[in-house]
Image (cartoon, rainbow, N blue to C red):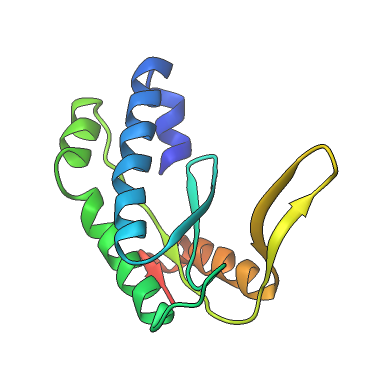
Length: 138
């Protein structure tokens, strides 16, 4: 729902809402052993077991997905979005498998990230939530 929110909310208010959303969501991800790979627009790409393997990463990521949904319904997120006349609704895609993890880019700019079919699968699962009216797909 963030694209339509961006069209209606003034930029100064929007930047505060995005910052609050990223701050609260990042705490949830890190609290479940995840690493924030990057922010892509209004999306958070998080990974588990990279660069260091962790036990039960599949469970941690799945529980985190549900906790992210829960977090959006709590204050201060809920009240701040309501104050702006908006409702925050997010979608989560979780996939597990083999990925290539490491520094990627050019000589001028490198970023640590993950790439591969299972990264793409997580993105597709996130998108399918809209079609099926769900919030989390694993």
